[in-house]
Amino acid sequence: MIAFPNIDPTAFNIFGIAIQWYGIAYAIGLLLGLFYSKYLIKNNNIKKEFFDDLILWITLGIIFGGRLGYVVFYDLSFYIKNLSLVFLDIRKGGMSFHGGLLGVITSTYIFCKIKKLHFLKFMDIISCAAPIGIFLGRITNFINSELWGKTTSLPWGVVFPNGGLTPRHPTQIYEAFLEGIVLFLILNYFYRKKYFIEGYCASIFLILYGVFRVLIEFVRVPDEHIGYLLGNFLTNGILLSLPMILLGCIIFLKVNDKYRKNIKK
Image (cartoon, rainbow, N blue to C red; front, top):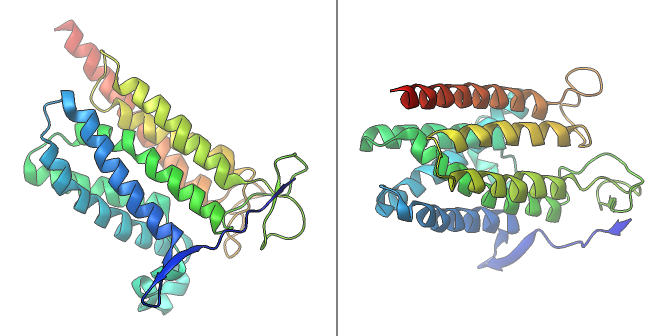
């Protein structure tokens, strides 16, 4: 059993305004993602300035997509009755990864259309950098003592202050490792391959994140106000991750088919 470090979710206060670790993680994740994206494109035919412009679009996509995703996917009935709290209540939490993903995809697509750029090429780079932010976000989930797992007798079980007296799976750490570190290493391995095909990393990101999330959902406690959607296994997280895997497979097959056709020419 591991004792919970009990870190204050509030990092510091400025003029009476509480600055949360979660917000800091978002900011650092975006900055590190921007710097790393610029590093990846140094041998590519993409101007670094495009990412300076794109980062604003991505930020808006994460905030609006993540918040609206939470409202729609996790607590729609409440927010229909309390529309004023959709964004006024954001400091109290309530962001959806899947909603943020949709926001980033949408904002990047619009940006690329306006600038006449290759959408999948940019999504490949974003996919390679995204695990940095995901890692930091999951670490702050752990600091906030939220999204923890089911009870366990494993030696690394953690007793969370709001999770009872029994050790639980530190699913936030599992996700930080799989969706952050492992996904980062795999994506960047493929991106550096000589035979890299445009769209590969974007498809692999969708597939592997979805698979990792589904696996972790089996040891993670579902949202209290939602519970299980079917039996004792189908959660909202699984339901939202399955379309990710399907979309990733479709993109993967299409880019593979395009690659084979180009070879035959």
